[in-house]
Image 1 (spheres, rainbow, N blue to C red):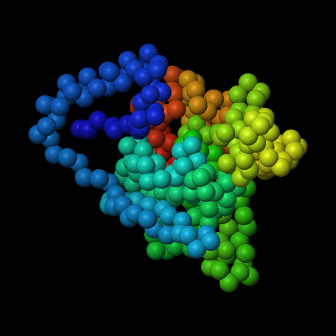
Image 2 (image 1 turned 60 degrees about the vertical axis):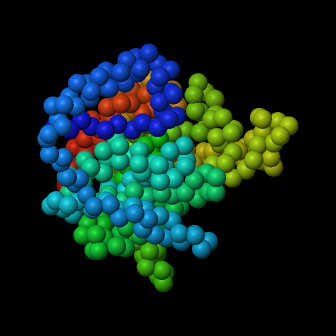
Image 3 (image 1 turned 135 degrees about the horizontal axis):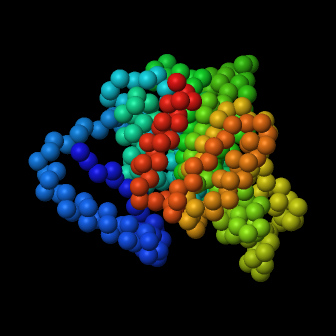
Length: 325
């Protein structure tokens, strides 16, 4: 028997330790692991449920490769694939895959037979949110193009992500591109639709981030590809307020719902101080109002993220099992 690893970065540790309840939870987890160390020392280590292939190039942009890691189950495959958008705060370094590994995303899904594609869509230091969205769609097309190679059903892809990855996953799923049958590029001959989306604490509305206010310009500016003026923090250089609102709206999933044809699941903590719970609530309401299927699981006391996240990863896997199989 093993304890579930947790997603824990230095920045997240600082956030958690600022909250007495979460500090107590962390201490309890540490004590429990220490008390069981002797008991499990002689138990055999369970093998990983997957084989990881790193840095697979799924597309090129301006001569630069876009990368993903592929996690292939070692057990019986179920013929299904999950696209995992590995992005946090709109950074897509390898550390994000490490975080998802600690959250047991790959272990849990691969144990059920899924092939998981950890897609790195780029970081805000080089790409805008709109460009990252296009990169996610390129990844979906590339995965569909290689579906036979990976032995998965191209028509039953699931997609997930957390935080910025959840934002990009929902944005891409709500704005799919059609196939281009006449294109000489084999990737373009596949559309970018997926069959189901389940995400953790996604930002969904840049027009109203918290309490009726837009997201901080220091966050918004690089996502839109414009710079804040030195003299006026309340403006972006060369852009009118109307232009800014339209650009922010274009990358806000809650404003891009349209007529959703696939099911969505949001899992969000009610103590999230980074991305308010209202972001998931608004997106679920918008999808339902448009006649689509959307569910919300609220994690009581959950921050951004929380220590027992692998429990909710398993719940998410259950949800995908029902929607994709």
